[in-house]
Length: 282
Image: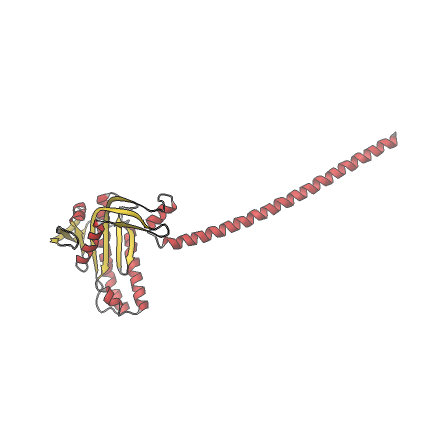
């Protein structure tokens, strides 16, 4: 009996030992699997971080082709990228450099590129400070609008547009001497500006594969015409814009002009001075 009891005890101990060995093996396997999954997770995290960095770099590059306001609206989900438009009151700005086309034909290509890019960078920086949406560059010409995707109110948008234009003209005066020396210009560069306010259609226009966020309508065409009629170093307003800004903008040379494509004469004003020269929000 005693011998049988010992055998049973030995078998019991052997069973417990086998169980312990099995549990130890399972723990090792589990620890190995956990470590394996951890390494997989770390590798996936590293790939995700790398892809995120690539997307950030790509989005920053693409952002240069979009107005900052539109870029942020899209990435915040405030605007959908589809073919759509709406009508609203806007203020439209056009500018160009007098005689730039003839000058560009005589300039070295590198000097021309450097000067034009510097000019556009300076003007764009001022536009963004005042809340303008940069629509497009056409050579040395610039088109900017106020009122979309964000607006401070019809009158405020118009005042900020005129204040921006005055600031641009002042900056041009500062740059003139520097450019004459640096690029050997035969004469100082002069900028003309035309501004008009009115109901426009703004939104995405184009095809399913290529969209252009822009503003269209008669008010846009008039702003472009006024730019062509403006004096060098001048800012020409339509009476629509003047009526919105006259409390803060001093104007002179009230004049009726005939504009191609418009039946009635247009009353215009030359800007002399603007009381508001600090960008909104500063």
